Length: 304
Image (cartoon, rainbow, N blue to C red; front, side, top):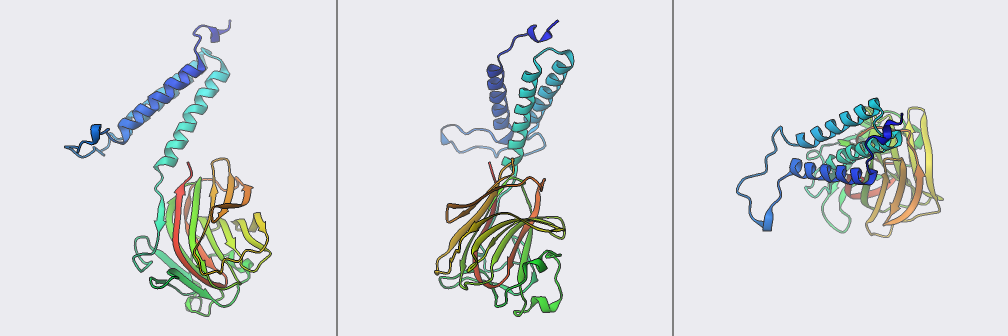
C-alpha cells in the first residue's frame, strides 16, 4: 500500500506556509514592530525568551517530518525537500546572526577595541596626510615559505625591530565560514607584498590568504595554507601596480558551497572553489612581506 497517497499535500503550498511561519516567528523573536514610526514606550525585550518561538517551530517541524518518514506518510522526495528547507533556514539564520568586524583605525591606535597584537616588525597608526591608517614599512622581501610557521607568536625582540624581514599583526575575532573579507589600503613601494588572511587555530595553522604582489607577474594570489604548506587556489596572471597614491579596495569572499571570489576595486580578479576548511574562523592576520603600506580599513562580514 502506498501510504504517500493518504494525505496528498502540495509541496509548494507547504513550503510557502513553512516560509511564512518562519518569517513570522523570526519577526517576533528579533524585535516587536513599530507602527507609524511611533516612539516606543518600552524597550524591546531581549531576555531568555528571545528566539524561543522560532526554535520551537523548527523543533516541532523536525519531529513531524521524522514521524512522517517513520510512518511512510509522504513521498521520500517530499520529506527530503522539507528537511533541506529547514536546514537552509537554520544555516541562513546562523549567518545572519554573525557579528560583522570593522576597524578603520580612526581612534589612532590598535591596542584596544579591537585588540591587535604585533608578532613581527613595527606597526603604528598614522592619522595625518593623504596616507593614513595602520602603517607598516619593510625594506627586505621575505621568503614566503618562511611564513608558514607560527605567525601568532612573537619571534623575539629582533622580529619586533624595523629591520625585520616581514611584519605581522593579528586580531582575534569569531568569523563565519561564509564571509567577505576586505581591506582598503595605500601602497608605496613596487616590491614585496601585502597579505590578508582569515585563520583557524591558536597558531593560525589553517588559513585562507590573499596576497598582493606588486611588480610580480602574478599580481594577486589566493591560497589555502595548512601545516604542510600553501596551495594556490587561483591567481591573477598579470602585473598589478597600485602605487599611485590612491587607496584601493581588495576583498575576497567565500560562500557556503566554497566558491571564492577576489575583487580589486570592485572588479573580479580571481574565481576559485575550495571546501577544504570548514567551520568558523578565529581571527584576521595581516602580513607585510616587503613594502610600505597604509591600511585604512579592515572588515569581515557574513556572506548572505
